[in-house]
Image (cartoon, rainbow, N blue to C red; front, side, top):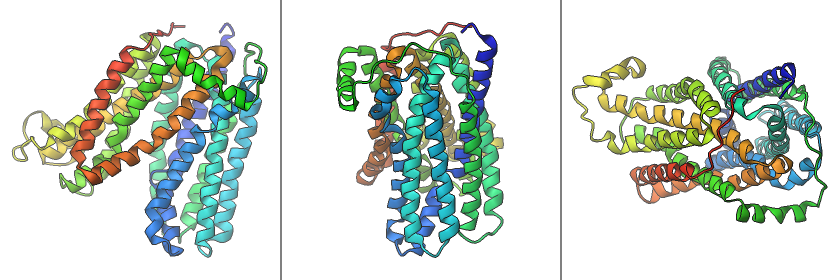
Length: 441
Protein backbone atom coordinates (compact mmCIF):
# COMPACT_ATOMS: atom_id res chain seq x y z
CA UNK A 1 0.00 0.00 0.00
CA UNK A 2 1.54 3.26 -1.15
CA UNK A 3 -0.41 5.58 1.16
CA UNK A 4 1.59 5.19 4.38
CA UNK A 5 -0.46 7.65 6.51
CA UNK A 6 -3.67 5.83 5.52
CA UNK A 7 -2.06 2.48 6.32
CA UNK A 8 -0.95 3.68 9.76
CA UNK A 9 -4.40 5.11 10.50
CA UNK A 10 -6.21 1.93 9.49
CA UNK A 11 -3.69 -0.25 11.33
CA UNK A 12 -4.10 1.74 14.57
CA UNK A 13 -7.91 1.79 14.36
CA UNK A 14 -8.00 -1.92 13.60
CA UNK A 15 -5.76 -2.76 16.55
CA UNK A 16 -7.83 -0.51 18.86
CA UNK A 17 -10.99 -2.23 17.61
CA UNK A 18 -9.62 -5.70 18.38
CA UNK A 19 -8.13 -4.82 21.75
CA UNK A 20 -11.31 -3.11 22.96
CA UNK A 21 -13.44 -5.91 21.59
CA UNK A 22 -11.47 -8.47 23.63
CA UNK A 23 -11.81 -6.16 26.66
CA UNK A 24 -15.59 -5.91 26.28
CA UNK A 25 -16.05 -9.64 25.74
CA UNK A 26 -13.89 -10.34 28.81
CA UNK A 27 -16.26 -8.22 30.91
CA UNK A 28 -19.31 -9.94 29.41
CA UNK A 29 -17.44 -13.26 29.83
CA UNK A 30 -19.39 -16.01 28.01
CA UNK A 31 -17.26 -18.55 29.93
CA UNK A 32 -17.79 -17.18 33.47
CA UNK A 33 -20.35 -14.39 33.87
CA UNK A 34 -23.08 -15.48 31.44
CA UNK A 35 -23.29 -19.09 32.70
CA UNK A 36 -23.62 -17.88 36.31
CA UNK A 37 -26.24 -15.33 35.24
CA UNK A 38 -28.32 -17.91 33.36
CA UNK A 39 -27.98 -20.47 36.16
CA UNK A 40 -29.23 -17.94 38.73
CA UNK A 41 -32.24 -17.10 36.56
CA UNK A 42 -32.96 -20.80 36.04
CA UNK A 43 -32.90 -21.36 39.79
CA UNK A 44 -35.29 -18.45 40.37
CA UNK A 45 -37.63 -19.67 37.65
CA UNK A 46 -37.79 -23.26 38.88
CA UNK A 47 -35.62 -24.57 36.06
CA UNK A 48 -32.69 -25.68 38.24
CA UNK A 49 -32.34 -28.98 36.37
CA UNK A 50 -31.89 -27.14 33.06
CA UNK A 51 -29.27 -24.66 34.28
CA UNK A 52 -26.29 -26.45 32.69
CA UNK A 53 -28.16 -27.06 29.46
CA UNK A 54 -29.21 -23.40 29.24
CA UNK A 55 -25.64 -22.23 29.91
CA UNK A 56 -24.32 -24.52 27.19
CA UNK A 57 -27.09 -23.45 24.82
CA UNK A 58 -26.27 -19.78 25.34
CA UNK A 59 -22.57 -20.34 24.63
CA UNK A 60 -23.35 -22.43 21.54
CA UNK A 61 -25.85 -19.91 20.14
CA UNK A 62 -23.35 -17.07 20.52
CA UNK A 63 -20.74 -18.97 18.52
CA UNK A 64 -23.04 -20.48 15.92
CA UNK A 65 -24.67 -17.09 15.39
CA UNK A 66 -21.28 -15.68 14.41
CA UNK A 67 -20.14 -18.54 12.16
CA UNK A 68 -23.25 -19.82 10.38
CA UNK A 69 -24.60 -16.77 8.47
CA UNK A 70 -21.33 -15.76 6.81
CA UNK A 71 -21.66 -17.91 3.69
CA UNK A 72 -25.29 -16.86 3.27
CA UNK A 73 -24.47 -13.13 3.23
CA UNK A 74 -21.26 -13.51 1.20
CA UNK A 75 -23.10 -12.93 -2.10
CA UNK A 76 -24.42 -9.58 -0.87
CA UNK A 77 -21.08 -8.47 0.59
CA UNK A 78 -19.07 -9.68 -2.39
CA UNK A 79 -21.16 -7.62 -4.80
CA UNK A 80 -20.29 -4.33 -3.05
CA UNK A 81 -17.07 -2.54 -3.96
CA UNK A 82 -17.09 -1.01 -0.45
CA UNK A 83 -17.87 -3.31 2.48
CA UNK A 84 -17.54 -0.88 5.39
CA UNK A 85 -21.16 0.41 5.12
CA UNK A 86 -22.38 -3.15 5.70
CA UNK A 87 -20.08 -3.45 8.73
CA UNK A 88 -21.44 -0.19 10.15
CA UNK A 89 -25.09 -1.15 9.75
CA UNK A 90 -24.54 -4.61 11.24
CA UNK A 91 -22.60 -3.06 14.13
CA UNK A 92 -25.48 -0.71 14.95
CA UNK A 93 -27.83 -3.69 15.07
CA UNK A 94 -25.30 -5.56 17.20
CA UNK A 95 -25.09 -2.80 19.80
CA UNK A 96 -28.89 -2.46 19.73
CA UNK A 97 -29.31 -6.07 20.88
CA UNK A 98 -27.06 -5.42 23.88
CA UNK A 99 -28.98 -2.24 24.73
CA UNK A 100 -32.25 -4.18 24.55
CA UNK A 101 -30.79 -6.82 26.85
CA UNK A 102 -29.80 -4.15 29.38
CA UNK A 103 -33.30 -2.65 29.21
CA UNK A 104 -34.87 -6.08 29.71
CA UNK A 105 -32.67 -6.86 32.74
CA UNK A 106 -33.44 -3.43 34.23
CA UNK A 107 -37.21 -3.67 33.58
CA UNK A 108 -37.79 -7.30 34.52
CA UNK A 109 -35.19 -7.73 37.24
CA UNK A 110 -35.69 -10.92 39.22
CA UNK A 111 -39.49 -10.82 38.93
CA UNK A 112 -39.79 -12.65 35.60
CA UNK A 113 -36.77 -14.97 35.39
CA UNK A 114 -38.16 -17.30 32.72
CA UNK A 115 -39.05 -14.42 30.40
CA UNK A 116 -35.59 -12.95 30.99
CA UNK A 117 -33.95 -16.27 30.10
CA UNK A 118 -35.80 -16.42 26.78
CA UNK A 119 -35.04 -12.75 26.05
CA UNK A 120 -31.35 -13.21 26.86
CA UNK A 121 -30.96 -16.24 24.59
CA UNK A 122 -32.81 -14.56 21.70
CA UNK A 123 -30.98 -11.23 21.99
CA UNK A 124 -27.52 -12.74 22.34
CA UNK A 125 -28.33 -15.07 19.46
CA UNK A 126 -29.13 -12.00 17.34
CA UNK A 127 -25.93 -10.38 18.61
CA UNK A 128 -24.03 -13.35 17.24
CA UNK A 129 -25.84 -13.26 13.87
CA UNK A 130 -25.19 -9.56 13.34
CA UNK A 131 -21.61 -10.20 14.45
CA UNK A 132 -21.28 -12.83 11.72
CA UNK A 133 -22.49 -10.36 9.11
CA UNK A 134 -20.15 -7.61 10.30
CA UNK A 135 -17.32 -10.13 10.66
CA UNK A 136 -17.48 -11.12 7.00
CA UNK A 137 -17.28 -7.47 5.94
CA UNK A 138 -14.52 -6.87 8.50
CA UNK A 139 -12.28 -9.57 7.03
CA UNK A 140 -12.65 -8.17 3.52
CA UNK A 141 -11.80 -4.63 4.67
CA UNK A 142 -8.75 -5.96 6.55
CA UNK A 143 -7.70 -7.88 3.43
CA UNK A 144 -7.77 -4.63 1.44
CA UNK A 145 -6.36 -2.37 4.15
CA UNK A 146 -3.57 -4.41 5.76
CA UNK A 147 -0.83 -5.85 3.49
CA UNK A 148 0.20 -9.51 3.97
CA UNK A 149 3.53 -8.57 5.54
CA UNK A 150 1.77 -6.74 8.39
CA UNK A 151 -1.14 -9.07 9.14
CA UNK A 152 0.76 -11.10 11.71
CA UNK A 153 1.56 -7.94 13.66
CA UNK A 154 -1.99 -6.66 13.13
CA UNK A 155 -3.82 -9.69 14.53
CA UNK A 156 -1.07 -10.26 17.10
CA UNK A 157 -1.30 -6.76 18.55
CA UNK A 158 -5.10 -6.98 18.70
CA UNK A 159 -4.78 -10.15 20.80
CA UNK A 160 -1.77 -8.97 22.83
CA UNK A 161 -3.31 -5.69 24.00
CA UNK A 162 -6.70 -7.38 24.29
CA UNK A 163 -5.13 -10.02 26.54
CA UNK A 164 -3.67 -7.37 28.82
CA UNK A 165 -7.03 -5.60 28.96
CA UNK A 166 -8.62 -8.98 29.70
CA UNK A 167 -6.55 -9.14 32.89
CA UNK A 168 -7.90 -5.69 33.79
CA UNK A 169 -11.42 -6.89 33.01
CA UNK A 170 -10.98 -9.71 35.50
CA UNK A 171 -10.22 -7.20 38.24
CA UNK A 172 -13.21 -5.05 37.25
CA UNK A 173 -15.50 -8.07 37.42
CA UNK A 174 -14.01 -9.05 40.76
CA UNK A 175 -14.61 -5.54 42.16
CA UNK A 176 -18.23 -5.30 40.97
CA UNK A 177 -19.06 -8.82 42.11
CA UNK A 178 -17.56 -7.97 45.49
CA UNK A 179 -19.87 -4.99 46.08
CA UNK A 180 -22.61 -7.30 47.33
CA UNK A 181 -25.27 -5.93 44.98
CA UNK A 182 -28.50 -7.94 44.69
CA UNK A 183 -28.98 -10.08 41.60
CA UNK A 184 -29.33 -9.08 38.79
CA UNK A 185 -28.11 -5.52 39.48
CA UNK A 186 -24.51 -6.70 39.58
CA UNK A 187 -24.88 -8.28 36.13
CA UNK A 188 -26.75 -5.23 34.85
CA UNK A 189 -23.68 -3.09 35.61
CA UNK A 190 -21.39 -5.61 33.89
CA UNK A 191 -23.62 -5.75 30.80
CA UNK A 192 -23.71 -1.95 30.61
CA UNK A 193 -19.91 -1.72 30.89
CA UNK A 194 -19.43 -4.42 28.27
CA UNK A 195 -21.89 -2.74 25.89
CA UNK A 196 -20.11 0.60 26.28
CA UNK A 197 -16.67 -0.86 25.56
CA UNK A 198 -17.94 -2.95 22.63
CA UNK A 199 -19.66 0.11 21.15
CA UNK A 200 -16.39 2.05 21.21
CA UNK A 201 -14.61 -0.94 19.66
CA UNK A 202 -17.08 -1.13 16.78
CA UNK A 203 -16.90 2.66 16.31
CA UNK A 204 -13.10 2.45 15.97
CA UNK A 205 -13.28 0.13 12.98
CA UNK A 206 -16.16 2.13 11.50
CA UNK A 207 -13.71 5.06 11.23
CA UNK A 208 -11.33 3.08 9.00
CA UNK A 209 -10.78 4.59 5.54
CA UNK A 210 -11.58 1.68 3.26
CA UNK A 211 -9.37 1.75 0.15
CA UNK A 212 -11.02 1.08 -3.19
CA UNK A 213 -10.82 -2.55 -4.18
CA UNK A 214 -11.56 -4.31 -7.42
CA UNK A 215 -15.08 -3.81 -8.64
CA UNK A 216 -17.63 -5.99 -6.88
CA UNK A 217 -18.91 -9.00 -8.75
CA UNK A 218 -22.51 -9.23 -9.92
CA UNK A 219 -24.96 -10.80 -7.47
CA UNK A 220 -26.20 -14.21 -8.52
CA UNK A 221 -28.67 -14.86 -5.72
CA UNK A 222 -28.22 -16.77 -2.47
CA UNK A 223 -29.00 -20.26 -3.78
CA UNK A 224 -26.83 -20.01 -6.88
CA UNK A 225 -24.10 -18.57 -4.70
CA UNK A 226 -24.38 -21.49 -2.26
CA UNK A 227 -23.90 -23.91 -5.15
CA UNK A 228 -20.49 -22.34 -5.66
CA UNK A 229 -19.30 -23.60 -2.26
CA UNK A 230 -18.94 -27.31 -3.18
CA UNK A 231 -16.95 -26.41 -6.29
CA UNK A 232 -14.45 -24.44 -4.18
CA UNK A 233 -13.92 -27.45 -1.93
CA UNK A 234 -13.65 -29.74 -4.96
CA UNK A 235 -11.23 -27.67 -7.03
CA UNK A 236 -9.15 -25.76 -4.46
CA UNK A 237 -6.94 -28.42 -2.88
CA UNK A 238 -5.15 -26.01 -0.54
CA UNK A 239 -8.41 -24.56 0.79
CA UNK A 240 -9.70 -28.10 1.34
CA UNK A 241 -6.56 -29.03 3.28
CA UNK A 242 -6.79 -25.85 5.34
CA UNK A 243 -10.34 -26.87 6.28
CA UNK A 244 -8.94 -30.18 7.56
CA UNK A 245 -6.26 -28.28 9.51
CA UNK A 246 -8.98 -26.26 11.21
CA UNK A 247 -10.86 -29.46 12.04
CA UNK A 248 -7.65 -30.95 13.41
CA UNK A 249 -7.09 -27.94 15.67
CA UNK A 250 -10.68 -28.28 16.95
CA UNK A 251 -10.08 -31.91 17.94
CA UNK A 252 -6.69 -31.04 19.46
CA UNK A 253 -8.34 -28.37 21.62
CA UNK A 254 -11.20 -30.73 22.53
CA UNK A 255 -9.62 -31.63 25.85
CA UNK A 256 -8.84 -28.05 26.97
CA UNK A 257 -12.15 -27.48 28.85
CA UNK A 258 -11.46 -30.61 30.93
CA UNK A 259 -7.92 -29.89 32.11
CA UNK A 260 -9.10 -28.15 35.30
CA UNK A 261 -11.68 -30.85 36.03
CA UNK A 262 -8.95 -33.49 35.73
CA UNK A 263 -6.70 -31.53 38.08
CA UNK A 264 -9.45 -31.22 40.71
CA UNK A 265 -10.93 -34.71 40.48
CA UNK A 266 -7.86 -36.82 39.74
CA UNK A 267 -4.81 -34.87 40.90
CA UNK A 268 -6.55 -33.32 43.93
CA UNK A 269 -5.16 -29.81 43.41
CA UNK A 270 -6.15 -27.20 46.03
CA UNK A 271 -9.05 -24.89 45.01
CA UNK A 272 -6.83 -21.80 44.80
CA UNK A 273 -4.79 -23.36 41.98
CA UNK A 274 -7.74 -22.85 39.61
CA UNK A 275 -6.84 -19.17 39.59
CA UNK A 276 -3.23 -20.11 38.89
CA UNK A 277 -4.29 -22.18 35.89
CA UNK A 278 -6.33 -19.28 34.47
CA UNK A 279 -3.40 -16.89 34.90
CA UNK A 280 -0.90 -19.27 33.29
CA UNK A 281 -3.22 -19.87 30.32
CA UNK A 282 -3.66 -16.13 29.75
CA UNK A 283 -0.06 -15.07 30.39
CA UNK A 284 1.52 -17.79 28.25
CA UNK A 285 -0.57 -16.57 25.32
CA UNK A 286 0.33 -12.94 25.96
CA UNK A 287 4.06 -13.62 26.34
CA UNK A 288 4.27 -15.82 23.22
CA UNK A 289 2.23 -13.38 21.12
CA UNK A 290 5.15 -11.19 19.90
CA UNK A 291 7.11 -14.24 18.75
CA UNK A 292 4.15 -15.70 16.84
CA UNK A 293 3.43 -12.29 15.26
CA UNK A 294 7.04 -11.92 14.16
CA UNK A 295 7.18 -15.42 12.68
CA UNK A 296 3.86 -14.89 10.90
CA UNK A 297 5.21 -11.84 9.07
CA UNK A 298 8.76 -13.10 8.50
CA UNK A 299 8.48 -16.81 7.70
CA UNK A 300 4.78 -17.21 6.94
CA UNK A 301 1.63 -18.50 8.58
CA UNK A 302 2.12 -22.11 7.49
CA UNK A 303 5.15 -22.45 9.75
CA UNK A 304 3.29 -20.80 12.64
CA UNK A 305 0.40 -23.24 12.27
CA UNK A 306 2.76 -26.24 12.32
CA UNK A 307 4.51 -24.97 15.46
CA UNK A 308 1.22 -23.93 17.09
CA UNK A 309 -0.26 -27.38 16.48
CA UNK A 310 2.83 -28.94 18.03
CA UNK A 311 2.59 -26.82 21.17
CA UNK A 312 -1.14 -27.46 21.48
CA UNK A 313 -0.58 -31.21 21.00
CA UNK A 314 1.75 -31.24 24.00
CA UNK A 315 -0.93 -29.88 26.35
CA UNK A 316 -2.93 -33.17 26.53
CA UNK A 317 0.29 -35.23 26.57
CA UNK A 318 1.37 -33.69 29.90
CA UNK A 319 -1.66 -34.99 31.87
CA UNK A 320 -0.98 -38.47 30.47
CA UNK A 321 2.49 -38.53 32.04
CA UNK A 322 1.71 -36.48 35.17
CA UNK A 323 0.92 -39.60 37.18
CA UNK A 324 4.47 -40.79 36.63
CA UNK A 325 5.86 -37.73 38.42
CA UNK A 326 6.75 -38.59 42.03
CA UNK A 327 4.77 -36.60 44.58
CA UNK A 328 7.67 -36.54 47.03
CA UNK A 329 10.86 -34.54 46.79
CA UNK A 330 10.11 -31.67 44.44
CA UNK A 331 13.67 -30.70 43.63
CA UNK A 332 15.18 -30.14 40.23
CA UNK A 333 13.68 -28.15 37.41
CA UNK A 334 10.11 -28.41 38.74
CA UNK A 335 11.12 -26.28 41.71
CA UNK A 336 11.44 -23.33 39.31
CA UNK A 337 7.64 -23.28 39.05
CA UNK A 338 7.07 -22.88 42.78
CA UNK A 339 7.01 -19.05 42.77
CA UNK A 340 4.29 -19.19 40.11
CA UNK A 341 2.19 -22.03 41.55
CA UNK A 342 2.81 -21.54 45.30
CA UNK A 343 2.75 -25.33 45.59
CA UNK A 344 5.27 -27.71 47.11
CA UNK A 345 3.80 -30.65 45.20
CA UNK A 346 5.91 -31.42 42.09
CA UNK A 347 2.92 -33.15 40.47
CA UNK A 348 0.91 -29.93 40.60
CA UNK A 349 3.87 -27.90 39.39
CA UNK A 350 4.44 -30.22 36.45
CA UNK A 351 0.75 -30.15 35.54
CA UNK A 352 0.91 -26.37 35.10
CA UNK A 353 2.86 -27.02 31.89
CA UNK A 354 -0.45 -28.24 30.44
CA UNK A 355 -1.89 -24.74 30.55
CA UNK A 356 1.37 -23.14 29.46
CA UNK A 357 1.58 -25.17 26.24
CA UNK A 358 -2.16 -24.76 25.62
CA UNK A 359 -1.90 -20.97 25.88
CA UNK A 360 1.17 -20.84 23.62
CA UNK A 361 -0.31 -23.16 20.99
CA UNK A 362 -3.70 -21.50 20.94
CA UNK A 363 -2.19 -18.05 20.48
CA UNK A 364 -0.05 -19.23 17.56
CA UNK A 365 -3.05 -20.80 15.86
CA UNK A 366 -5.27 -17.76 16.38
CA UNK A 367 -2.72 -15.43 14.76
CA UNK A 368 -1.88 -17.70 11.83
CA UNK A 369 -5.43 -18.87 11.17
CA UNK A 370 -6.94 -15.49 10.24
CA UNK A 371 -3.86 -14.30 8.39
CA UNK A 372 -3.55 -17.48 6.31
CA UNK A 373 -7.24 -17.38 5.39
CA UNK A 374 -6.71 -13.90 3.94
CA UNK A 375 -3.51 -15.06 2.23
CA UNK A 376 -5.25 -17.80 0.24
CA UNK A 377 -8.55 -16.03 -0.51
CA UNK A 378 -8.77 -14.50 -4.01
CA UNK A 379 -9.59 -10.81 -3.62
CA UNK A 380 -12.65 -10.96 -5.84
CA UNK A 381 -14.09 -13.92 -3.94
CA UNK A 382 -12.76 -13.14 -0.47
CA UNK A 383 -16.20 -12.93 1.24
CA UNK A 384 -17.13 -16.30 -0.26
CA UNK A 385 -13.91 -17.97 0.90
CA UNK A 386 -14.12 -16.42 4.37
CA UNK A 387 -17.83 -17.16 4.67
CA UNK A 388 -17.45 -20.74 3.50
CA UNK A 389 -14.60 -21.43 5.90
CA UNK A 390 -16.42 -19.94 8.88
CA UNK A 391 -19.69 -21.67 8.06
CA UNK A 392 -17.85 -24.99 7.78
CA UNK A 393 -16.28 -24.21 11.15
CA UNK A 394 -19.67 -23.83 12.89
CA UNK A 395 -20.28 -27.57 13.51
CA UNK A 396 -16.81 -27.80 15.06
CA UNK A 397 -18.19 -25.84 18.02
CA UNK A 398 -19.90 -29.08 19.09
CA UNK A 399 -16.63 -31.01 19.43
CA UNK A 400 -16.06 -30.11 23.14
CA UNK A 401 -19.50 -31.56 23.85
CA UNK A 402 -18.32 -34.76 22.17
CA UNK A 403 -15.27 -34.70 24.44
CA UNK A 404 -17.46 -34.49 27.54
CA UNK A 405 -19.60 -37.38 26.29
CA UNK A 406 -16.51 -39.52 25.68
CA UNK A 407 -15.18 -38.77 29.17
CA UNK A 408 -18.49 -39.91 30.67
CA UNK A 409 -18.30 -43.13 28.62
CA UNK A 410 -14.60 -43.86 29.14
CA UNK A 411 -12.06 -41.72 31.00
CA UNK A 412 -10.21 -38.40 30.85
CA UNK A 413 -7.13 -40.15 29.52
CA UNK A 414 -8.96 -41.41 26.42
CA UNK A 415 -9.94 -37.89 25.38
CA UNK A 416 -6.44 -36.57 26.15
CA UNK A 417 -4.93 -39.28 23.95
CA UNK A 418 -7.31 -38.48 21.07
CA UNK A 419 -6.46 -34.78 21.36
CA UNK A 420 -2.72 -35.43 21.36
CA UNK A 421 -2.96 -37.71 18.32
CA UNK A 422 -5.10 -35.10 16.55
CA UNK A 423 -2.45 -32.48 17.24
CA UNK A 424 0.33 -34.47 15.60
CA UNK A 425 -1.93 -35.28 12.62
CA UNK A 426 -2.70 -31.55 12.36
CA UNK A 427 1.02 -30.79 12.22
CA UNK A 428 1.33 -33.18 9.27
CA UNK A 429 -1.71 -31.65 7.54
CA UNK A 430 -0.37 -28.11 8.06
CA UNK A 431 3.01 -29.09 6.64
CA UNK A 432 1.24 -29.90 3.35
CA UNK A 433 -0.29 -26.42 3.02
CA UNK A 434 1.04 -24.14 0.33
CA UNK A 435 3.68 -21.86 1.80
CA UNK A 436 2.58 -18.23 1.64
CA UNK A 437 5.50 -16.29 3.06
CA UNK A 438 4.42 -12.74 3.77
CA UNK A 439 6.76 -10.15 2.34
CA UNK A 440 8.00 -7.57 4.78
CA UNK A 441 7.18 -3.94 4.30
